[in-house]
Length: 194
Image (cartoon, rainbow, N blue to C red; front, side, top):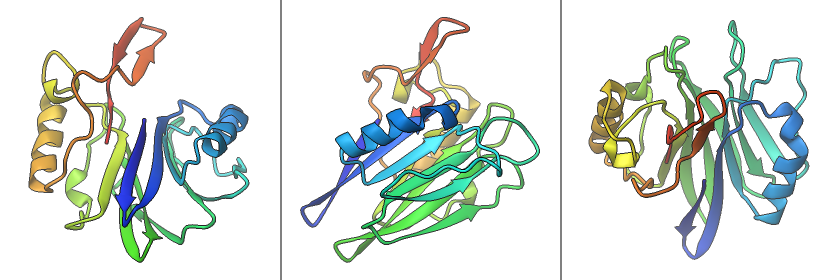
């Protein structure tokens, strides 16, 4: 999913991608970032370990590897020409949440990147959502009719309530194509939200 935020006529192109392992997909990611002129890429399920070196020419790399368990991890890439400062949200090993504040045309935009496995708590109440210029993206592993599922589960209710309380607008449309295809179960779903 690619999202464009307009700030004083300067578009900011943001890519969200659940990679299910990024190490061996670096070349195709790099090609896409450059061909689509992506400014910020938020990637979930990187599966990187601290000993894995991962950089892409022309981008600052901010990452949060999962510790103590396999898989997981989140990463944000920001074009070198965009001032950025990263931060992490301490969820006590529940959801993996990192953020970055980028400055474009004298405006600061806060971007949250989240991955939450089905067996962990979303921890959404720990996000300090600013009143403007904020985007939260990620794999929430939640179901709601608002983003294309036939039913709403407990986590879907939690995301909907948080979205309303935080005054965020869901960019996903229930009619959008699914964002995930399970080769194992031969099913399609939409756990990835913006």
